[in-house]
Amino acid sequence: MGGGQVGASAWSVRGRFDGDPEAALDAMKARVFEEGDYLWEEDELGRPDSIEELYEVESVQESGTHSVLDVHEFISATGEDDFGTIRPLTDAELVAAFGSEEPSVADFDELDKAGRLPYERRPRWSANCALLYENDVAVELAIWGVSGD
Image (tube, rainbow, N blue to C red; front, side, top):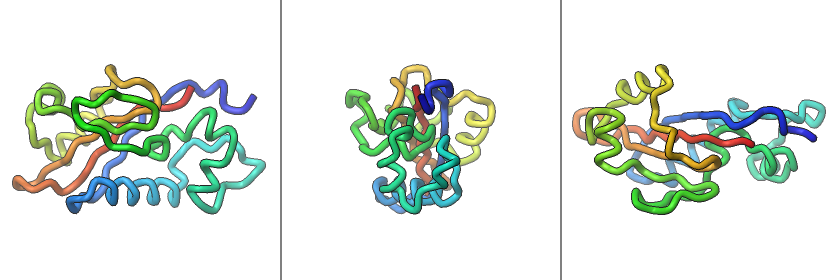
């Protein structure tokens, strides 16, 4: 039976951005895994030693981790959302959500804390992302989505 009762949940994470979204994603995944900041229902097993081991656990394959660990592939802003994809917001979506094409870390945190990040168009098991700016420079990457069953 495992994770059938949890349901889907929204999550978000942000991390340092140095020009490489894949590297930023890997660093966020590593941090979330290290901190144990993901859904783990198999207490009798003990937590896995690696992200690879985590992905081998049946309940994780069925119910996910309700975290950035559930998404894997960046697509274009006009791409088709699919299982595990991360789609950047378009400029129009950024303006609608944050009031700017270059939202700041504070802008993101404000919407996140208020539960107002744009989730409504996301299929489960996918995410959105946005660069967060300071003085016209992208300093962080934010990723948020919905996963679980």
